[in-house]
Image (cartoon, rainbow, N blue to C red):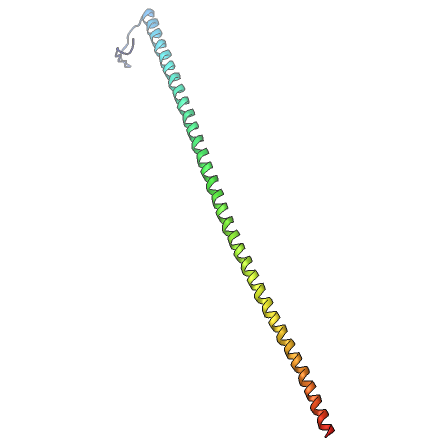
Length: 137
């Protein structure tokens, strides 16, 4: 085989090679090329298998990351929704308190206006009595 032979060819050297030697060299060279092609095919298959394995791993990592992102997103949505609901509940309670307070203030104003009108009527009534009494004397 050619593996063990070291051949040095230069431009100056001229050797005559017989057709038998050339044929033998050609066969050995062809068999070496065939073995290299076989090895290359085997390496390509191994590389393809490793690439496929890496693709599967990448896909699984992507799925896990997507699941974590979805879970985190849903958790944040739930958290914000609960906080907004709590805030809405607090606003509703405050609104009810304000309604009660405003209603009380309005009733108080109505009563004071009512008392004022009663007092005005009494005052008018007293003035009429005084006028009537003064005119009788």
